[in-house]
Length: 179
Image 1: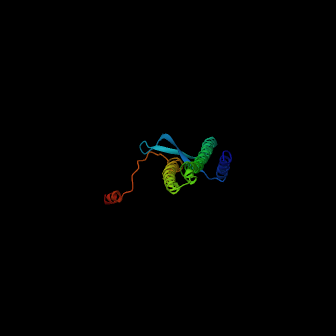
Image 2: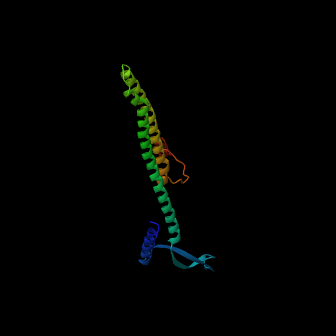
Image 3: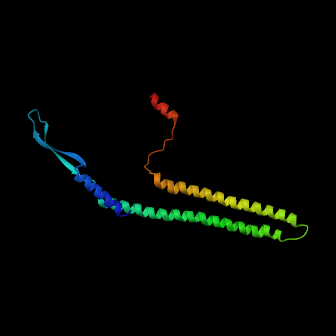
């Protein structure tokens, strides 16, 4: 990726140039000789120049930047998914802690109050588990979607060219058509 692509591009460029293809620009030399028709400038020579616009050093630097960016993005994406995995492990542990602290003691009780304690313990366990874990999962999903949008999507497709955004509008199209 770092060295192979620039070498392939250079080989393809040399092949194209050797086959006679390439950019040709014309360079016009102007003579200051006066014409007999009243002082007009005469074009004496026109030569063709071949422009070699392939800069291997520029391509190597560009490819180096892309390689570094690819490696950093790979590490970043791996860390992001490890974060999601760690969060799922935290959910499992938090659920187990809530189970152990709220509901399990009611199952070990004995006597006439055990069914009421089980109902109360279950309702406390369910409420805490639902609120904490669903809240954490919702926040995790929101943050992950936000990260995907701003970090990964914008890195691939956003150019930042400075062109003012103009939203699509049928009214604007019809106004332009009338003019």
